[in-house]
Length: 219
Image (cartoon, rainbow, N blue to C red; front, side, top):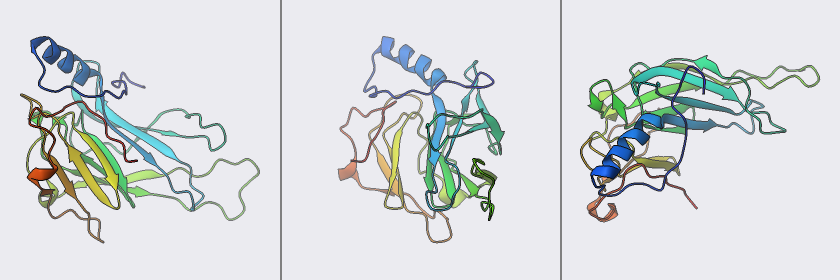
């Protein structure tokens, strides 16, 4: 995807890799995109859009955010354009939409696995009162990114799985940069869109061998 952004893929995950798998894991980590989110407002008349960010062809985390709008009829993606850049480089992270905020958490920055959480305010323009025939719906845009140390993860995790359900954000497994981990963390942003702490219960963790590079689905 534009400007050499690392590709996007889903893998079942790697647990307790041997030396060969560690090399494969590193290669895959360089190829994986850091963030993907589908932003959908079905009742506001706004166009659905997808955002990607991640590492470049050299494996270096970037601040660039790419956005593409989906055609409501065909589902085809439009041309990729640059959205509001992240405040710090990030790759191999998670991105989840909750209300009007896009959360990016986990992954690596210039120093390695990071605990920092980024919050993007997604702004949706009002559709025209009398739009022209076949006029495209207005697309959303990230107005700004901000950080708050209270929102930070307790530990740095890269290539973790994650999901959002019932207003809560989850991080599952991932690596500390050395080996797969099985910790599960979750948080529920408050009514102001702030994260004040992450929760953890040992009985919710994955088996001891951990998992990284995985994908989660809520069914």
